[in-house]
Length: 179
Image (tube, rainbow, N blue to C red; front, side, top):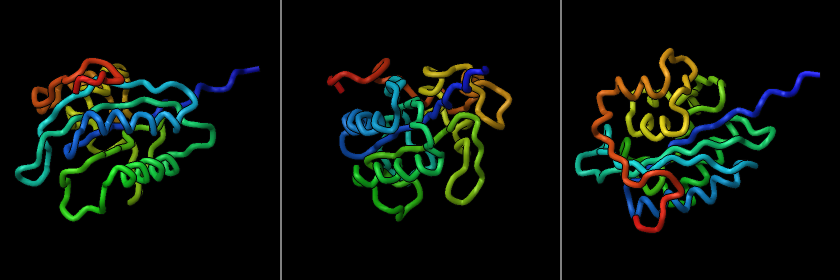
C-alpha cells in the first residue's frame, strides 16, 4: 500500500507598519498556530521600506510563516481566516492602495495549488518580485520553486532589485521581547 502524500506546506507573509509591528507580528503568531496541527516554521523579522505605498508611509516589519494546514483546509477557507485575523488586529477596508496597516497577511503559496480569480491568486502574484517576501521565505525554504516560476526562492532573491532594501532585525523566531 502506498503511503498518502505529505500535507502541503502553506507560506504566509506577515507585515505591519502601524503601532508596534514586532509585537503585532508576535501576537499574530499565536493566532496562526491555531491554523495548523503542527508547529509553525517562522522566519526572522525583516525591516523594509514601503513599496508602492503613499508618501510618508513608515517602514514595514516583515516575516514569513510556514504551516501545515488542517485536513480539509482549502486556500479559500484559509484566506477567509487570514482576513478575519487582519480585521481583529484593526485592519479596515482600504481607502488608499497600500496604506499603512497594523497587520497584513498574504497567502503566498498553498502547496502546489494555483488560483487565478478575483478573490485569490496563487501563488501570490507579486511574491517573486518582492525582497521583503523573498528574504524571509528564503530562510525557511531557499530551494522552493513557487508554482509558475523556474527559479528557486533563493535565486529569485539574488536577482531581485530590492534585495538590498531589506535588513534582518531579529534572526530566527519567535522574536524575543527585545524589539
